[in-house]
Length: 520
Image (tube, rainbow, N blue to C red; front, side):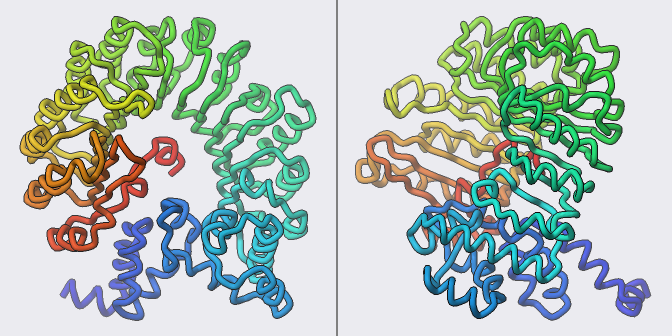
């Protein structure tokens, strides 16, 4: 009865629609769906065309495939006859994501006039068809900015996500014609330029539902003053910001009444002045992300106040230029104060075994929440591969498997591996389901020297037998040559993995950068 009710009342369509949402970014699956029948095609097509440019943005341009970017040609079919003639004056075969790379990949040219023409033509098509723009990357578009876009408010009125590199005409136009921005990413502008600060402040003030602001390279606190409409702002991201000589942070954060998350990514001058301002806050400082390449004084005070909120942590050991004792102390502080970490990224380990085992203790402490893990030895191609990298990688592979949680969304290991150590890791981790498993193997020598000792050919059976991996990427980087060897391009092996329900992907496509994850 329940089954027939679903069919009779049209519930099947709604159910399939809900299911289809889970494939929103799985383009190969969506492509398969459109081939099933008319209903499936009807449901999948809007998701495939929802943001087609993002498909290519996640693609390695050196390996771009023509069939992945046919949507550009589909758009250009709608050009009028005069514009088609103009297009043919440049070239007829076209490709890309950001059109500049698209043109370079397709016709092997960086002709700026051609690129600008394509920009203008596509925007013209969108405007004429009454399209509404939801994501606008003004950082890129700035280079080929066309004033004609300002003549069509309906096209730009519904922008939800804006990436902005300062352009005063665009700022003025957006302030008057767009009040629907929910996420605003601001990339470097001229500091202490009152004209720019005024118009940017006006843009922020004009928004009805601004939830997220990201400052990249520059942060003028005036943009978050009480005169702006910020009663909806719940997320602030600081990336590559120098907090030196900024003394009103506590005033800024005190007025943000619905702020739920603060993210600090590779910022500078996180010194006692910065931390004291945070300590003086009368409300919680909900620091959700902290990625550092410097160990700063008084960090324990920051972790005491905010460690219970911290969910994402990244540390580059080699870039901190600190003593081993400071690294060790930081790992212990994170272990003691930050037990809710979901995303952990550690790069540039040194060969101090005490630090390595303290890191294992941290992983074991947070394993209940841990979902994304990256360990990268940060191999230096200038000095070459030595015993330090080999021994460190061996310790990681021999000890990591048995302390992993039962389930991981993502595991990325950038190490110098050998078959025995990797087999130990795979055996010890066989009780862990890893949705996305990535190996970047730094291999001493050349492809010819490695020969049959190539680890890629010796562990594939282990991966298939595990049946605990959904997506897999494996890349060999040879130290004696620039050449790489990647599983993704071994068609027969890819098909063999597919028969075992494992999807092999390009390493760079599968790799997750935290900032990209945060944007989603």
